[in-house]
Length: 258
Image (tube, rainbow, N blue to C red; front, side, top):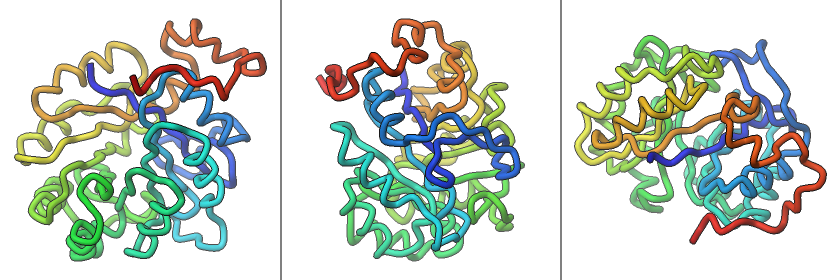
């Protein structure tokens, strides 16, 4: 089974989900991001995906870097972080805060040469590229602007620069729970030779996970899931007691790493 990665999107210090990337269609699910991270960890998450939506909009005056540092310090699993990471200094700062992977999105699209420098200075395991696309076009600055860049062309270029993992989000599916864009992931995998792909966007039930799992031989080895986990769409979440947060011992982690 491909790896399921819970998502925490931070906006104004709160855990939110957006509908198709629209900041005007925001749902707040939780006000304590560190506790939310611990809840996913207790539920046996093996990797956590965190995005700073404030920073992604180039809003340097309002970001969630401190909260992300506390999340990384609280967990014993890898945390991959994206949102507003534009420079080599940003990458180093995030790694210093405890992130295991740093995701380059806008920077990769608009300044691809920086990706080459980042791979050389750090490692392909620490620097991954996030490609967020609508109708095949890469979107930038928190999905708020078009780039005119074809998503498949960008992915191929990133591979030649040494990138070995791409997180691909179909924005039109994100937050909808209507199902992933399987065709887009398949087309992406056929364009690449060495890159592993993390799918993102649209997962709403187990059948959607099964459809992505069928693509594992083609290089799709993981999937980021947000809204459907927050809204308890999987039967096993009843066993996890998601709705009874208070009695859960959040510092008594399970054996997810074993």
